[in-house]
Every structure is written in structure tokens, then in C-alpha cells.
Length: 369
Image (cartoon, rainbow, N blue to C red; front, side, top):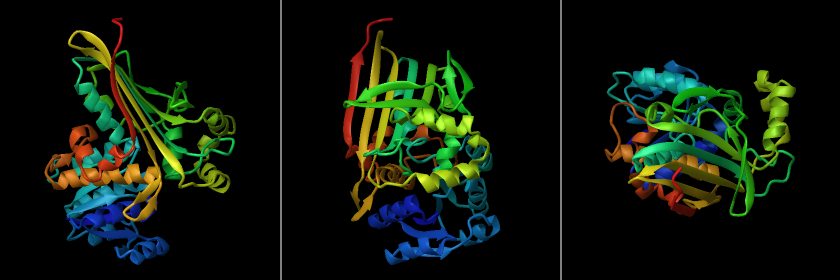
């Protein structure tokens, strides 16, 4: 399969190396950043300098490819998906933006090509897990999805380091969040719904952020009483971010906030990704709760060091592209994350990056309510 990888940042580089390693994908990386392309050139990966914001130029560059993998920031997703539609090739991306996903669904309408956004960690893998657990129940009461991309060794007041797209981080902290409450889909505010929990002796907090549910609200509408997604952080992070966004009104100055965070908050490759999903409901007349957790740490993959967020994000989109290539997924139109079978994902050569993590998969019976 000939793949155009659009976006040669850290995640794009990880995707390129994972796909190239198999020998089943002919990858060409597109970007306008000569330095980023030079890094891939040095690793023996073909590159092409293209301005991804120029839809017309991108469409021409895509001729002859089978699929496009978009590893660019969310605000470029609609234009890139439009270029893929015009070029007649399949489309996969990592966007967490709700508006972009709705627009891509419209682009995919009546298409003979597949359009599959939200192929990362959250949205993405987290929705695959939640949907699979929900299917195992006769009646679903509650679905809770929690994900954290955290520094392994927090040292600053925010107890946070930049481990992925800063644009995506700000977007999920500022946009309204979908949820289901008492069986009704509704919008809730970001940074609200704070809860605290501990796992493996470490204390965490979680709160509403945008986009992590993907299309699950629509898929599970009328089938679940309560459904929500929250980002996991170390205690105290949410209060400081709320101070910045609300009290100092930085939510209305995203460029200023981005500049501030880039200047003050260092990045780290020593990170950990925490995945925590609980689904509660009835099975064979008994109230049960299924729990799926993973802790994934930075490590060497394909002979190169990768952070946990690189492993989980790149691993997820590569697994879904591979399953698509094998015919496991729908081959045309808009494809939802919850159409990916969890067993097939975890058995996939890329999906096994998730299986290599410390894992607890448990079911426990609850007293009847």
C-alpha cells in the first residue's frame, strides 16, 4: 500500500518508522518544514516538500497514492480530508476536534473511499475499548473513559509536561464536551466534573475535556444511561489551568496561551500513558462492572526511542491502517472507531504495542442496586 504521510512532526516520524519497518507500506512523508523532512530523509524515508495548507497543491501531490495518513494539527484536518476526497484516496487522521470530525463525515458522504478520523489514543483506542466492553452487557448503565498522558516525573507546579500537540491540548481544554446524562446527550463544560482516584498507589484527578468520546455518544444513544470522557492529571493541575483560562481570560487568547506554555512548560520523552475504562450494567441478571486499564511507558521501538504518547498514538493509527489494508474494516464511507474489533486491534502487529504494557483486565460483580 502506498501511503502519503502528511505531517512530519514527532508523531508523524513515529508513524513513518512503524509502517516502514513492516515492508508492507511504501511511505512518503509530506511537510513544509525542511528540518522535519531532513530527519526522515536521514532515516531512509522518502519525503516531499508540500504546503499542507494549500489544498490544491496537496491534491496534486496525492495522485498515485492509496491512502493518506494525516498527522497535522486538528485545524488543518478539513482541508486535508477534502484533498484526499478530490484525489480519490482513503483518509485516516488523529483529530480530536468535534467540528472537524463532523465536517469529515460530510466529506465522506457517498464516497467510494474510506474516511476514518480520530484514529489515535483518545479519541481512538479508548472508544474501541469502551464499545467492546459495552457490547458484553445485556443492559448498559454507565461508561466511564479516563485517559492521561503524563510526565513520569512531574516537577513543576502544573505537574505536567508537553508530550503531544499543544494546539490539541488547548483545544480540548477550551471546547464544550459531549456526554450522556440520564439517557440524554448533552454538552458539558471543560475542566468541570472533577473527580479523584488512585491507581497503583498514585493519586490522580480527572475532569471533562473535549473530543475524547469520538462518535460514541451517537453510537450508544438510547443504549446507556451515563457516558463521559475525562482527562487524567496529577492533583492540582486543573485548578491552575482554570485560573489561566478563566480568571486570566487566556481561553480567549489561544495564541498567547500557546506562547506562554511553550516558553514555560518543557517537553519530555519520559512519560506515561494511563488508560482506565469502566463499564457497568446487567449481564445474565446480575449487576457487573468490567474494567480495562493500561499503563504504557516510553521505550525503544523499531530501534528508536519513543515516548509513551508516540507509541500509543502512532501505534493506534498504524494498527487501524493495517486492519483496513487486511479488509477487517469497512472499505468506503465514514468509518467510526467503534467499528474496530478490540480483539483484532490487540492481535495486530501494531496493536500489540498496547498489549506490551502493564495491564489489569478484570470483572467484578456488584451488589444489586
